Image 1 (cartoon, each protein chain N blue to C red):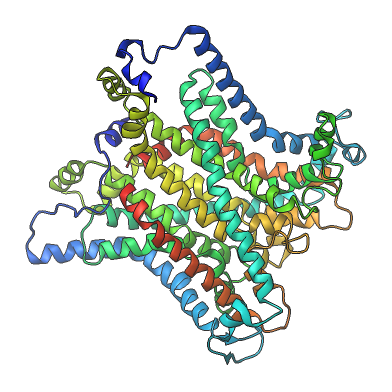
Image 2: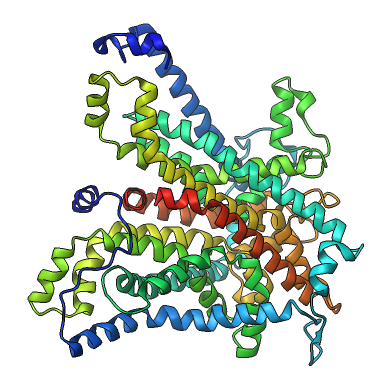
Length: 291
Length: 325
């Protein structure tokens, strides 16, 4: 950084005295540990609250419940019909992810590999949609769905959710397909494979980490979506988990232990999904950076 | 693993460099084009249904007055825009405040995200043993982001909640907020900004980490051997790699802070007394919570003004992005 450092002989540089290097390392580790605690903090209290009864939650202050109880979780799950909401959420999220992967992997393959007039314009058009704010189209979507008779159904959620992910998904998948060596495609063509077959047998398997990354990046916000869901679903039997949690929280006497139990029910599946797919997810994101 | 090798062999490139196609005779070229169109057809069809109609409808609605129930619209030209911008004393001041809050969020959130995420990524890149575990823990705020964790934060920030309790027991009782952090006009917006940064750090950190890991250590070592100072190494080897990542993080952060209002809706609904009102939330209220009054045109107009602002920002940012691409 300074002139002195630049002037030092190359061998001496980068080798700080042992004690100082150790101290630096320690400070670094402490900073990492501190941020780990910050990341965990709300989650810890969510777990803590979910295992407290309605009296202990009001006493506050202590993280570890004195009289841990499973009743709060069990009651929230069964009496408040969280199983139904859970399945609704699963349905909406599942179909959205499948729809996104199906629709935009095909389109991205066309953008990355095939050649047709208007390809470039169409690609930039889809990516450009990134800047159309969700709030701008929210009202027209509701009005349109009302006319089509799908407002308030799960299909009415899935269609705009899929459409809304187009920009980022197209960008990531086109990048991934683009980084598959062209020779593989041409060799398969010479062997007589059609484009559909090459897409399915060569490009999709090679782009698995990106596909999984896209799936996670789509699944998490969809699972948590609250804005469109809130204004379109009116029938309680179709509620997804965020709406169920909201009605729990806006009841006459909101009970934080029940709200935390409900929150935990929402959060745990996503954490499990992430931990299970983390390896692919990380390498998929890394791939997105590299290209 | 194979992917990694492939990825590394293929450095930065133009996504849409023309695909090398063998010169084909007329008919098979047509077939190739048709195949291309067939592949994009589902995406285009979905867009025509969900995108084009809604965009066209939204634009025309922004020039009309409608309450959602009457059979006809009343065309009012630019009135909705002008009312929102300055003319209507019942609307404009609230909008100005929301715009100011949105601007603050748009500056502070991306900045704070980068200031936290980059050092964390650098530190994490040096750790070897606990990296996997730490990475998972750091990622928790992203994975759990959304309504559930917003309620957890609300619980933490209650007047008698854990954060006030923690501050008092640390002897920092002066920082505690007896009304709760979200009900206190002085702390409501800063608190939400902190939570937004907390949610945005994970992805940014992971992107930086991936960027740092793709730096070839041999190149760095060779540069050091040649007598390059640490500053030069950072400037000529590390930063060129991190710059496009930073651009992407800033861009996504701007987009999220301009458009995202879920956290505001769930945690404060604009309160206390408009201190956390943002543009997205205003449009949402105008669109869905005004009963029978004719505010749908206003909502649409506000939506398009948000869009135009986003577009202007993007164009401003385009140079950074292009150099990063």
